[in-house]
Image 1 (cartoon, rainbow, N blue to C red):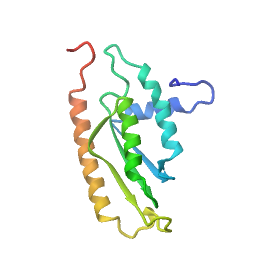
Image 2 (tube, rainbow, N blue to C red):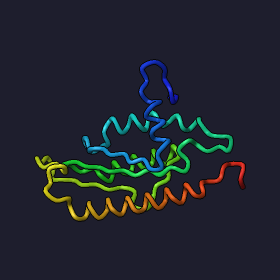
Image 3 (cartoon, one colour):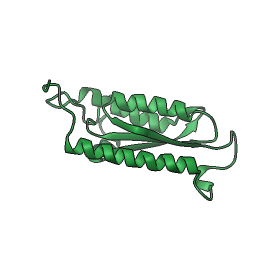
Image 4 (tube, rainbow, N blue to C red):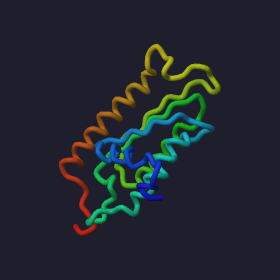
Length: 152
């Protein structure tokens, strides 16, 4: 995988937007207990970061914060977080405390999060906490990024 697979590859433009941001939020529904294939494809594309270190050995995503939001009507929110957190960490993103939020409705139910009259209180509080922590960490990293391999 590279950051530009040639003609017709839309990833380079999305990659630029991701790397221009201080915080990346990946949102995914739960599909059969797993993150969506779209979320997984984004991570697969970011695999190229592993071979794109700067002169100090840092991947392009070093100093960037990532967080994950999951919704669905079946179990699997924690599994989705675990899978996405590990991949985001592998490609150089930092995770703030409480970097995941989720809402899971009744199994095989017909109510979607977007249809709720009021957000679920615990989900709302966790999402607010995620935002506060992610913004705080992003500010710290922007002010004083990670050292490179040449700094002992």
